[in-house]
Amino acid sequence: MTQILFLGKNPRGRHALGQLGARPDSGSAEDPDLVIDATAAQVVDAFTGAVALANVEDHLGKPGRGRGVTVTPPEGGEVHGRFYTMMALAPEGCRVQHSGPTAPVRDPRVLLPAVRVRTVTEADALALFLRASSQRADLGDARLAPRQAGLLGSALPDLVDNGLRHAPTSGCGVIVCAALESDSREVQLVVTDLGPAISGPAALETLRDAWGRSRAELGSLHFLTERASRLGLDVSVQIRTGSAQGRWRRRWHSDDADFTPGWTVGVTIHR
Image (tube, rainbow, N blue to C red; front, side):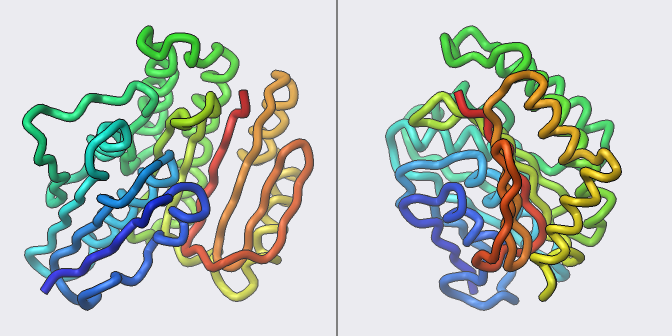
């Protein structure tokens, strides 16, 4: 038997997070084969890529032999190449389908395809890659300014280190993805894990405590927001964990939200 998970027409942002660790739309959770069906998607972003790969890694890492994942990208058009680029680093055991007569066109606006990061050393290398890819000539006037690229490059290793330390049992490990929005000049960096430690019943209290502790101890989230302010960048930070969500854009706000497993941070530079 095969599990099937449909991503829907608009699997980005909070809609993508609704699919993180979700039960399949058909089949049993014990079935060794998983199909992630994105054929209906009309638009995707860095959240889409991070969530899709998190589900891939989580499925492949579960007990049982012969596990495999097939990912079907959106059908045709610009979104096909964009999604295909996001899944370019899918692990062994995952097949990203392509039925066209020619290879998909790589979308340069995908600055960092979704990838599992296992060490801080890997995160440092990916930060350098992200800085370089944000300066590609084929991005034209959408290229990031050096201070914008520098902010994302410094944030990536810190956020990955946070996931590696606090979510060692995450079924997907720590996943990162970065991309320019397809319909604007905004750029997103998304880091997600499926660690259980934060997403319990007291998630909102825990989230507020984590934010306060970061400020008191000059942690990665506080450093990110302070650096953005010093650089004069318009940046927002979104956090989803359990039934809680937090958002910073010049000031911090947190409240209840639909359940999201693990811990996801999205950093957006508004341009």
